[in-house]
Length: 155
Image 1: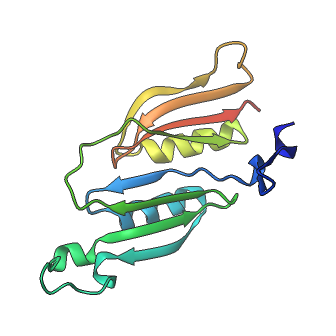
Image 2 (image 1 turned 135 degrees about the horizontal axis):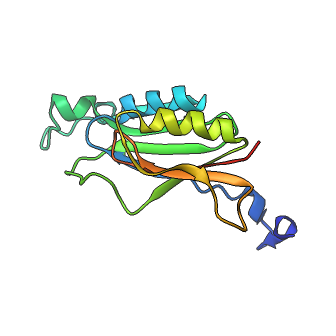
């Protein structure tokens, strides 16, 4: 029903895209490559701090110049994840969880296994309680410190 509502005669809610933006501590490119392999996506944009014009009064330094200023990963289904290496120190984890809703339980199992490699399982992938018992879900923190909720429909 909401798909047919026009917002200010400009766009429907269906056209609104909300995607996560992830901050990294120097390993953004590595993480995006890893996520692209897991989800079958493609890195469509990657720029580095060194790509911006140099400021002689405030040089960034070679290490920062090599870090990712902005990256975008386009997923096979049209979704998107964006991210960058932070110029300030980060604590591992955050208050944002990423939800990967997969079509089948087997897809959820494969994704959960891949993301939990070198990570920490918070809640194992298991059948959801009623009334959502037609699906499975689980939670984990991946090796980059991000929390994921993985779900799929039971086959």
